[in-house]
Length: 324
Image (cartoon, rainbow, N blue to C red):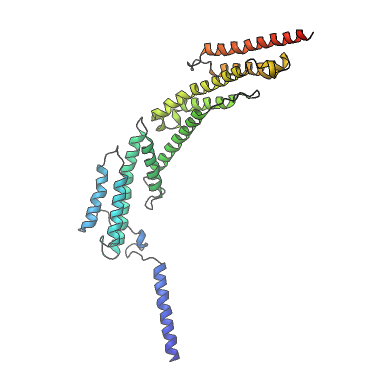
């Protein structure tokens, strides 16, 4: 009796072990011996009279008939949903074939959709007008397809996915630079304030580099908006620089009377530095390429500064004479 109980216990343990092993180790294909979830050994051209497979394959093939100027992300999602639904309902085949047909159809969907998506993305990149919503779709779909289990590292589509990432990265880099330039301002009027000339020079240098090197990418170079906004940056920086000089000169006009003890102190702390800043302003922007440079406005600033210095000299001379 004791031996019988032991035998029954061994049988139960063995049964449990077999069940656990089967649960842990996925079933394998009878043909290729791969895990069934990875098996796609059904011939792509195989004839089948399964209406569910035929219907889904027709949807997949119809993707190539979609226009290149309109993304078909919704169609992809719909077909993927149909595949998984019919798979879960065990309508794609009997036994292992249901799993295999699911894998095969998902593979076919990935291939056909990737091919169409690449054409649609290139249609956008070849145009002069780039819309944010289109770029968002390209970015999102590129990331999704790259992560797809059927995308191979050295597969046929990966070079295009890499190229799209490079295009978008360069576009975003320039777009960020343009935003930084458009947001740039400097209106400080304190005595020790100095306009960030080196920063402006760097920005102008970057603009020239982008313009002289086709924006760093042959596709990004097609985007008219980037070209137009880059072209406007030098004038934007010119206006910021000019406004800084004007505001500071006007702010300090006549303040020699109550902010400085002598003409020398006034010249050292205000006039000489401002005169140097005016010279740097002219040096940066008085160029043939910059038609927006207004010589009259520059001369007016220079005259105002020099007139203030003249008035300061008279004031301190008079103040000195009155002390005698």
